[in-house]
Image (cartoon, rainbow, N blue to C red):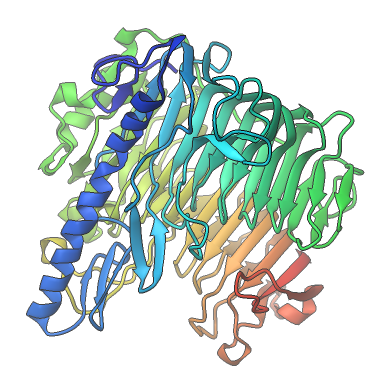
Length: 640
């Protein structure tokens, strides 16, 4: 998509101060590195500021101090942080069509970009790196032939989303919402050790409409430790391996051509991968390293797999893969600049202090089909209604601040879909910090209208509906509603409590989802008389991953459930009442038998209740933990 020039949160790399040459004649490496540095610099200054604040608060209160639930804690004299108190304004690094010549890795140059999640445990804060091209067919980053450092065996990336040292235990746990789309990467000639893209993402990430080619490279896309990603429209050719994964959770490949590579489509060690519509020609689709395991799902009966075949394998037509293949709806195109309503032009301000409710509502009511947001965090005091005239709401990765009425639960939703329409609504690209938290939902649907939610991330309830009968597509979304009640500091003097609002709640809807990550809520997903199909579902915390009632049907293709030792006796991973559940290729980890975490499923039907514990679900011990502890159980399938 070509964004209008008035969007101040879009960095056009061909414009000052970057002036990258898109004719392919001048080396652009320094200019492109500067653009990424400028997007991430605010994290370093923000972490320094938060550290000082936490230490000061600890001294004032004589002990522990908290700023939000997760962003910053000061415990027993130690600073814990996953990011700044306020996420810096996010940018889209935009490449207009053309050829961009580089001679070295395109990435950030910082060496102090890390957050101390706990003492001695630093995570690289490579978050919100958004690299967008105009079109993958005519927008290409080209590595100069015979570039230094890309010789055979070097395995050096052309684009890197993470430069942290691999000696860290976990280098990508803070790398949320990294996106690569609508661009091509050409690794050039004589660069036999080139990796096209070293990709990193935590919780949410996306690679879409990307072409990566090489004369004789090593790996097309190399997924860093722990990465999660939604992939579609990807072409990779000329490498030994199209993709390589290690302990990913999950990677959903929904449309890719890997047939032009030499050895294998995907090389995996402990990956969690869904294969949908993947072309691989005469080479094997998947090679599993001898030390690996993992969970894999295929939309064919006999894919070509080599290596050590261990782990979960789910195949089409073998009664262990029922999730239907659905093509996600395409967004409408060919809009002109007159079709955009830019909320800042209507008086909205992303300063986190100015109430922008009326201004954003005016933009929604403008009659224009696309509503775009600016940078920063928008304070919302009351529900904003999305009329049927709006086809696309693009938050442009802005954040939000929940006003008092939302914080205390006087409003049901920050945004409401309230008018019936035959036109699908696309809602996309939001990444918000903890200031969005409160007793509300981000999106409320109170009218029949098909909806697509894409690239949404925030500590809040994402969606619920009061009127059924619609199709809801969800791609690459993350949310949670767990807020702490410990004594300490919180913004505006309000100390939040554990929020009982459900992150995803569906009543009479048909739902298709992929790469879905919901964490830390009593109930993480509620299915009330809906049909829900999920490719790649990760949950975390002691809450119930799926509660299904009133005839709901839930089918999950590859799942990860982390229970995390909370010892809540009455919680089950799946809680099914007069409904149906079919889940395949999973792992439940983080349990302790002395904390009552052997329970997996409660099935209530016709007045009778059946409890399935982990030992009743075709399970076996698995040792995927980096420290070598046996901490999880692989589950072939659960059917109730």
